[in-house]
Image 1 (cartoon, helix red, strand yellow):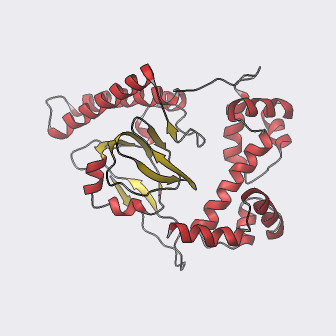
Image 2 (cartoon, rainbow, N blue to C red):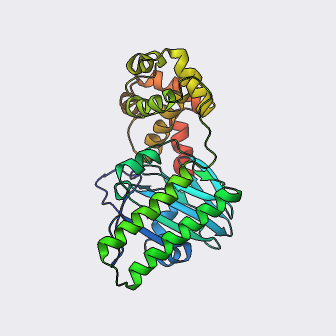
Image 3 (cartoon, rainbow, N blue to C red):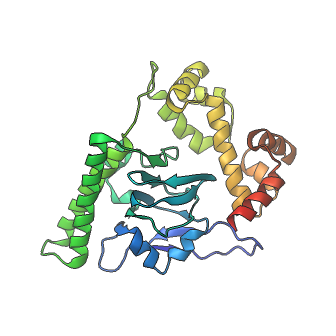
Length: 302
């Protein structure tokens, strides 16, 4: 399932533990399907009750009870029938697994073929964390997960099918599931350039520490700034500048909480001229100074 990566920092407050995917014995590399009950029994389950940063996807359908958790400084309470999708690199913590029942799929992005990964936007760091399919969408997603679970258990329990055949079936079943979930409730941007936001979003994820100017992204992508703003507002509900600033703020919160970098060091990592400019930006965006946020966040995640 998951294991901690060895931490080399000598900091008094260690950075957020990173975890990598580890396939269970007698199972294929890259994917695992298990119940929350099995997760509770696992020796590693205690490690997920503190903030950690996995390098693989989590897909969970909750069937019973409630599941409180935190993903990137936002608290959620998952209810039966809802789906959780935590992506690689997102910091999250399971607050209370007792009483929650459901099926969890862990998988590495590379387990699926590139075309499926692109269609399902597996590398999208802004995909919804909680999804609430209804009607036919809910039933289709449930059946896709049940079929995937059945095939995984068949492989685990022994089957006459060749291993490569099983792997191919698992890839196709997982592809069907993530493609369905990726497009549940999706609305195309209501503008003349529906792809502008997708390109802008990718560019922001790559360059948010280099520039926070909408004009720079517009020039690099070949759009007018107003075009990017309209596309971003239609797709994300906020303007392009707000979208950039939110991404920078999230990274600042991660660094303040899970590293011992000084404010000046974080300012440099995020492209600010000095700690004073960073402090002013963070105060406006987060409602507190960087130091005050660090103190509060570490107290709440200890």
